[in-house]
Amino acid sequence: MAGRFPDPATSPSRFVSDGSAQPYRLSWPQLNGLEVGVAPAAPPGAQLSWATGTMTVREGNRLLGTVPIAKPDEPMGNPYAHGVLDIDLLPGYHPLTLDYSGDANFQPNRATVSVDIPNAEVIASVPGSPVDGQPYTVEVQVVPLPGVSGIPTGKVRNAEDFAQPSFEATLDAHGRATITMQQRPSSSSSTNPISAHLFIEYLGDSTFVPSRTLVQFTILPSTAA
Image 1 (cartoon, helix red, strand yellow):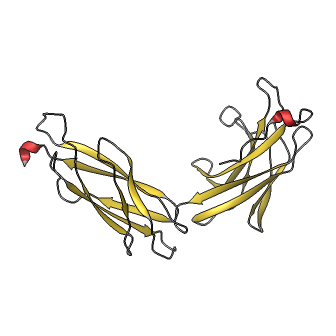
Image 2 (image 1 turned 135 degrees about the vertical axis):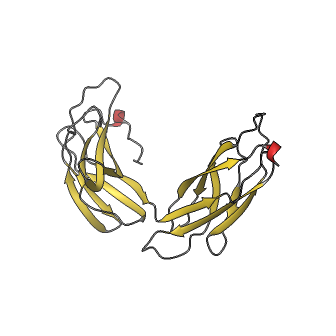
Image 3 (image 1 turned 45 degrees about the vertical axis):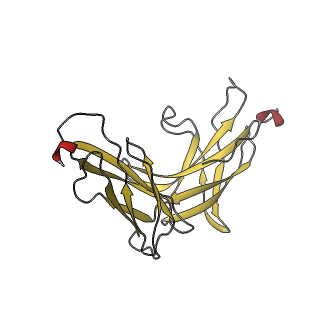
């Protein structure tokens, strides 16, 4: 999510750093916020101290806050100095600018990142009991999360194959799509039901953030037809 690191060879006297940010949620301690970090860029084998200073975060012209940057409590789990800005971003797209102040060892630098918080839910199902080798239907609807207005537009597709045919479909005016799957025959001669899976992915539009859901269903052996 960070911008590309500058080449440290262009500033041999002071290594260059870059910033990265992503929203996160910890189970312990209970914490909501935006984690921002400084990832040093340096020649291979260089021994660098932990970055210090501050990170200022903006969304457009709006100042979200400034947070100190420090060595993490568990550096083995997080190799970069970081800080946590105590702010909850609303669902949707958030293009952010990160301005690192620099310190005695690292130059100031700026990065642009996009923090995308889902604001729509994908609901999908496979009605009935598909039979191995025969077409079946997948019903998909993309709905706004509570408190979010509008109707999602764009396309849905299966994000993972799971031995199922690939597909892509356009949502209608109600955010729905129905897809008829031309199923591949199973190579198994088993007479037992087969567990099947589809990851249905919404590709997003200018308002609604991409999201996905896992659909689990059962395919009956062809002998049951």
